[in-house]
Image (cartoon, rainbow, N blue to C red):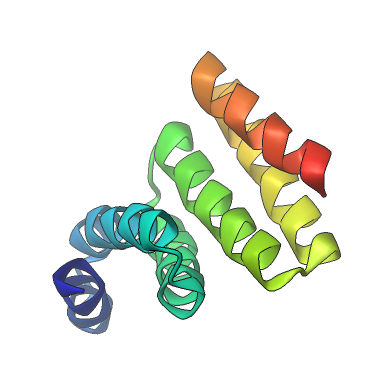
Length: 110
């Protein structure tokens, strides 16, 4: 996963916006391929990068959403619930109806 490598290096190089972009791409790719370990790492990197970058609510929502998906894939209900709740809050603040709906679906699973 090139995107995951880019995210790792960008976070170490303190380029949080690049790390966030790459981590979100890596998370989408990992989810589509059923690669839980990579999804977990990408989700955690995305949340860290979004926090460091002071990213817009929609981007922070995406980071929490993928973190929730990773917890869901591992069967960690409480962790998934917390991540999806954070995603719903961020998507709501961004008026991102689709993102909020997807996060609520994840929350429904949790």
